[in-house]
Length: 179
Image 1 (cartoon, one colour):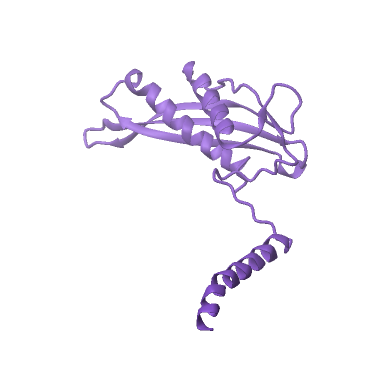
Image 2 (tube, rainbow, N blue to C red):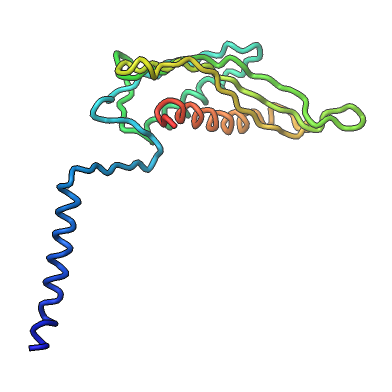
């Protein structure tokens, strides 16, 4: 008789587990999560158009435009399921690179700068064709400091890449990440 109770214990546990699972599935609650931080409803949004971001800054470093645009498109492609299109779309992102500035930082006692700051500023116009209240026109900036003894030409590519990555993350979080 005691043996009979032990052999039915796994069956009872299985039945309790199945009932709990069925209750969770059919309770009507919705569990959703994302691994990339985006909060896009893919039942509503399917496409995004990303325009060129021309350089409108006083100082111009021509490779910056393609560096920034490539980083932005790659980030959107890696972190969303949106189809990037050139035509009509559910979402649109356009703008311009408005600032590329060098400023001295950390001035030493002999009045020479020991650090120089490269700042890049990007203006973004974001349009949501489904919800107009999400549209905005905003400016984003990021910078990196480098040793003033270095020539800008020697560090410019690396700095532009690092700053572009930071700018793209800021823009993504403000638009598609919807933090």
